[in-house]
Amino acid sequence: MPTSVLDIEQHLLLLELEAPFNKRDVQLARRRMAKRWHPDVAPQGRQYEHERHLKAINEAADQLERLAEGSRGGQVSRNAVKVSAAAARREREEAGRRAYEAEQRARAHAHERATHDPFGSRVPDHSVVHRYARCISYPEWGVGTVTGIYFSQDNGDDAIEVQQWARVKFSHGVRTVPAGSMKFVDFSKPDPGAERVERFLVAAQRAMAEGEYELAARRLIYARDADPRNVAVLRLMTLAFWNAGKLDEAGRAVRDWARVDGRRPAAHRFAARIYEDMGAFDLAEEAAERAAKRGPSDASAWERLGRLRLHLLDREGALAALRRALSLGAGGEVKDLIAQALALEPSVAR
Image (cartoon, rainbow, N blue to C red; front, side, top):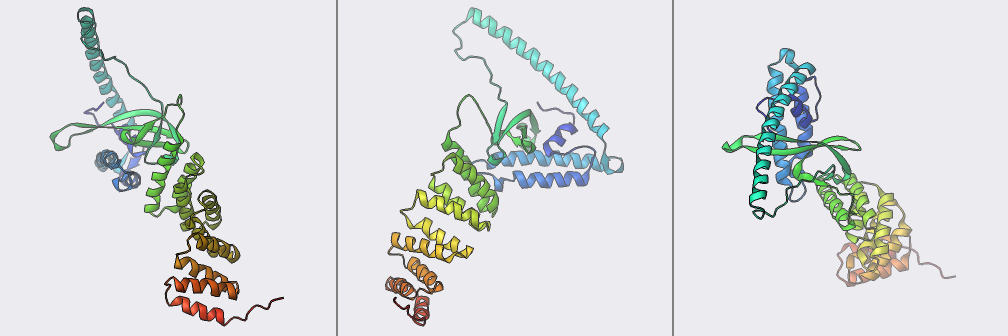
């Protein structure tokens, strides 16, 4: 419920800031919240919610900065925050009293209408209170407890618009979340696995687009737990771990991917590259051979197999793979590899 009294306490809650504070504290809090709620990092379809929430944060920060500049010593004391909160609380109580009186008048009118016009409306008068919610923009936060719902008034464009946001207590701390980025949780109904997969998959794709591969991998672990045989999840998890430099985890992910989608060459192709980065050239050669057999028209697959066999000093195997790649139209580099293979001594048959 918007108030005309400056509610410093509510602004501090919105910025996740505590009193006493100065202008520098407000600037740091504004920067921290802007990184979290900027529209550019919002999931698809949630940019507007992030934009409105960030606008409310900036307006609160502007007011707190002006207040800090006009305060003695440039710092707002804890006592000043308490006085402001008490004044705002009294105004909210007055507004609540007026709303209650208006509701009582409406109830009396509804009772009179129900008595004299019982079929005037078939819409039931009810409300539902939700306590638990998750943040759609950051699903890895898990399910949190809603500790309070707040409203910020926006007087832009000569029209009063009310921004709704909530304080949600997650396992790692309390966060302010715009109402449009919250999804309430009903524990009386099971959470479909497909929804969990989609939720974490979208969040992981956004993290990978920002170059945060470790964060993407953590999100994809939740998606994999919801659906262990989802090829898209296993593929992205392999890429995320590989780009994050976690080769052991990438190797496990690509093996899971190959078990689910082993008839196609993609998983084996990535396995060969990951094993090669790990220095396990024998495993890389086996994976490259599987990839080449499942994609026999791919010249690059045969070239990779030949290069790995050449590294393992397998002259005949390297020549066979490299000549196959050359016949499929591989580049001039394959000819150099063939020359290197021919320079090896032939293996002596026992």
